[in-house]
Image (tube, rainbow, N blue to C red; front, top):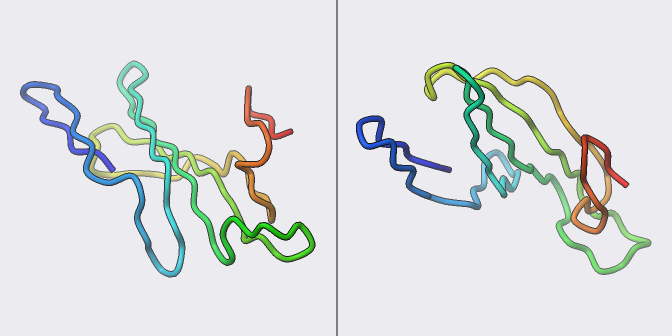
Length: 97
């Protein structure tokens, strides 16, 4: 998560890993495009980073949110939603391979 000082426009990293309702939320990324802010993060439910490919490995989802004021956020979409560790694949141009 980030804190933004709107006067100096400095961005402070507060936390990169959080737990919410039995979900792990990691890898937040915040950008501004014209007059909107966008944030992506990965949320993981269930067993995380299981080394055995025959066992469940949790549900991984990359989420995209948008805001005009950094206070009120709206979910735009789920970019990727998989029942495997997406860190073991490649994510580019909106495709997971």
